[in-house]
Length: 491
Image 1 (tube, rainbow, N blue to C red):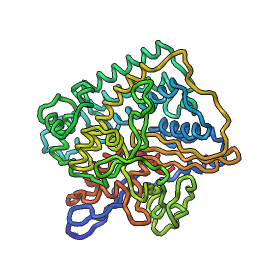
Image 2: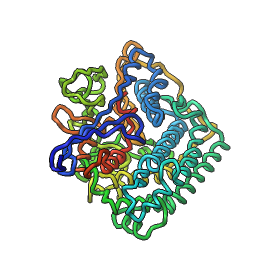
Image 3: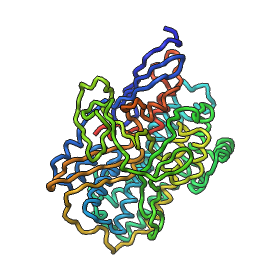
Image 4: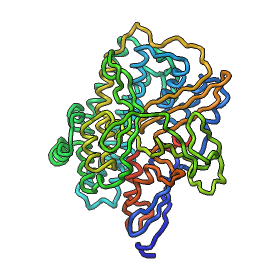
């Protein structure tokens, strides 16, 4: 069969991906003509929550995932707080920011070092001048960067131990704050830990101070860094991205959504969030209207396919007999449109100039997603240092527990991979409905009733498939640039 004839490839399961993923590709003339993304695992945790006491959500919802369990815990606590009409104590808000940021930063480091960069150590790239360096640094099981990162990640997670007691599946995050306070000496210990993490990132990942990374503003800055910047894995990635033209790979709809995260910003009196909520499209930010979010089941193995479902009235009822179905993932849409979410979305809405410059030139793509994740890592660690200084030992850490009334509430936060929302409905003192839209549900959604592909499906269109490739490298780079967490995708 010649390359010009249409062929079908099924790529998967993917290694170095959290959970199960399968991608069906229609290939013609050496490029992907259409992609169909399948999340093949269904677990039904939303159904498990039905009929239970509302506070059980704090125990069960984090079990959706072991990588981003804090994000799930935070969303559940926010939904409960909305029903109870409670605001977290100031210390509790800052401590929650630190707990969430610890998990998100650990996820960013894990993705770059263990999930994304090892692909460039493959023999397929042996002719490139950076290949030997990449192999030494990132080859699976033996790369020096991976070993060093795991030590840094373990050190970072000591913050989780101090504030949350355990990870994953902590119960420290509560609707009114956190269940445990810390003393002054523990704050000093956290600053010492963050200082060591900073040193590790500045030495190996960036080769420069975090402030220099956060201050990058435009494509010329990136080009100068690639050509003559400090030696580090960031510069190495920029060289790879340049040689492989990763900025031309994996462009989706250029419509981005974020729910916002880290209330209080960088000072005790800041009423804003560090990352604000919003939608970025066509070069500008608009307000997020959460009431326009709905889930389409047209191509999902689910019932209730007649129309898109608002999450409060939605369902998670399996139906393998859907003739148009090809995934357990639902298709969330904002005002009927698919949206991409993640670090790039957060930095675009937050107004970071480099993120906006990258998207203005080439849209959301493999390179811009990874660069945004690294820039966010630098900014997040700097924020964590400020938050430790905002803690006030001896003052309240949690508002008193209150009775949970019947009603509806949404808990919205940001996991490392993007916008995470929990829609909670309580009737007669029990959970009557619980719907979760996770970041990878947004990014890896199937087609909807209008035939619109999900963001990854759109991003894969046009990907290069070389003769004889069964697992196309370009497809793998695009998939990994979204940092999928399939365990969170289908609940």
